Length: 359
Image (cartoon, rainbow, N blue to C red):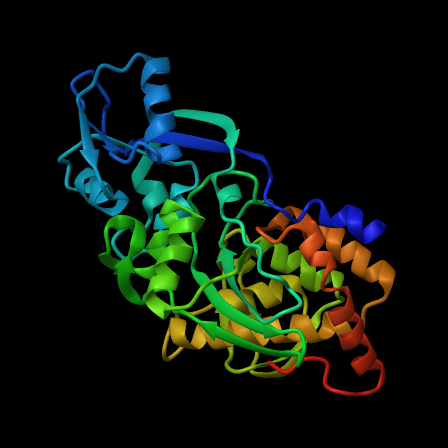
């Protein structure tokens, strides 16, 4: 009953808070003659629907220039072809990691904003595939400094893992897709860009793009806020991993200097912040994001094995409660409960000293 209650919080919320920001360059003076860029797609909540509401609310009579693409619109802003653009509230997190927009937060400012609780678009992404049969799941790591996953359609999808799991054999395969993989973006009429850019258009665009790229049906998705990784690892009492290289990385709030997290090479015990640093770091790695995906797989495997092997019921309940705010999935509660026999089998294997799961 306790687990059943906790699982209520794992599904997508019926309504979430969407927010649009009217953004200008930091040195721009916004006037009645300023041109505003807006996404043309009338179904885009933050780029069009809320943008129109904000125009009405603030009684803006400026010239509107339509764009099919957020990146083209951002480029037009920096080239000063337009003076302001409508973006999601978390636009800095989404775009600042791109090479074209360094220090985006310092170079821009928000002059107007509007938020509204609306029906969650991701509720349409349902699947009736049984979890007692082999299934495919997309794990999306959402890089956010904030706690929770209850706001905004757009997000930073730097971590993309395609996982297949056979509950009968307990075999899992994790296939990581590097963020800079240049592919046709499904919701942009197959215009090519880095695959992580699809996250700027929401979960469905990410799934459609990967299904098209890999020619595989994705049954389910799980979005995990990076803040949830910290809570999960700490709830487990830490994880043991073999760190492949000595490095330093910014902390959970992207602070460096005295706040940096530094790890030595070798097998060691990591807390949540250290595990996140290992999963995030890429700048000093020889192959950049290719090597980072390997580190992320190391972290995922360590979490999976620690959770099954060394967790009491009270610990498991605490884990569910702590991370529920940072996980969103289209797996429904009753479908999750169908995994009961599979989890029992994994626990029995653990008690018998057998391999819990083969990844």
